Each structure stands twice: as C-alpha cells, then as structure tokens.
Image 1 (cartoon, rainbow, N blue to C red):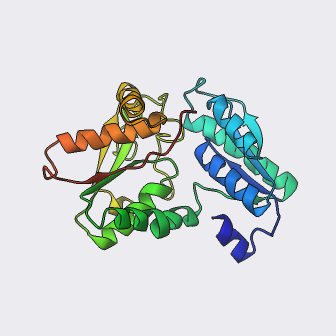
Image 2 (cartoon, helix red, strand yellow):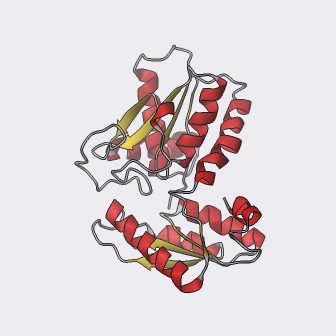
Length: 258
C-alpha cells in the first residue's frame, strides 16, 4: 500500500503517514515507515491491549489512543473502531498527512492477491483443498481467495467469524464483545466480496483460547486469539467430513500474544 501510494504521488518521499489500527496493520506500517523514513502516527482504541501500543511505539510510531465508547478493555466494538478512525481523520485534516485507509484501500487486498496467495500456492506445490481466515479489513481473505480460485475454482474458501458476530454469514449480531480484536466488527467490510467465499465457520471465545494455548504448548508458537480461532476453524472443517480424508487446509497465523 505504501509503495503504491509513493508511486502514485499520493505520498511524498519522507512524508507523514496516519492510520487507524487495532494493532496488526499498525505494526506492519511501523516497520515499513521506519525502513522508508516516514514519520507515522497511529490511532487505536484504548480498549485494545496496551502491549500493541508498546510494540508500535518500539517500532518508532507515534500512537494516539482514542477513548473507548462502547466496549471494555480487551473487547473492542465497531463503535470503538469508528472512534479511532474519527481521530485519525482529524489528524489528517490538521496535518495533511497521507491516510492509508486500510478498510477501503484496494491495494490492501491486491497485495495479498499478488504476494500471500502466490506464496501459499508455491509452498503447497499447488496442493490445497481449503483456505480459511478471519476477516478484519477483509484484505487477506479477499486477496488470497481471489488468487486461489483463479488457480483452482474447487478450492474451498471459508470465512472465520466470532460466534455471535457473524455478519458475513448474514446472522444478527448477538455478541459484539468478543476476544478477536481487529476482526468480527459485526459488519461486512468494503473490501469483502462474496463471490470467492464458499461458507463461514463460527468460533467461540473458548475455542479460540483453547487452540491458542495448544499452539503454544504443542507447537511452540507464541500466538494470539485470532490465530487460535483460525486453527480452531480449520480443525472444525477437517472434522466436518466435507473434505477428503487427506485434505490440505491452509490458514494464517496472524498475530503474536499482545
């Protein structure tokens, strides 16, 4: 996203960048901004875990916390995310900084179509029966599923949603407060396209915690709840009988414990 903003002239070399984040995108932007020499300001809900802000600051970003308006610490709702977005837009207005706008930036999903999808295809040798991912901006799912479907239309692409916040499935939101920070906001993101989705799987907080802990104790992987949810959903799909017994299922481990 940053390279294309520079190429288009929307972002000048060394120019300031602003973005709202729940943590993951912010960390990625902090790394890129540090390497390319851009001052970066990130806004985030005060309800997101403080470790996220610490990590982004350690990578050189200026982090401004928006007050939480609806959720509670560790449980961030759409209203909380919109408050952080409002703060980011005010900073853009005041400073003239480039706004990444990850939720509406087509280069978000294009990056995954051009890099993540081909990486998965290459590393599996083209042997993949299903792909699953939680949806925040929808960049990862939209881009990867688009690429994979072009390679083999029979690859099953599944959206993972927090149980009780399954808007993409079309169900009413009954549990907006869940532990999958940065995903499951109870709405269908702008970048999401239904034409590459085959189905959805709901994952409870308890299942996400269980698989997060298993990934640590059995695999030595220091990950967060969203990674746990992705693996829980992959396990559910494998156990459903909807795929061959020797099926290869791919998901993404998207976070560290923060």
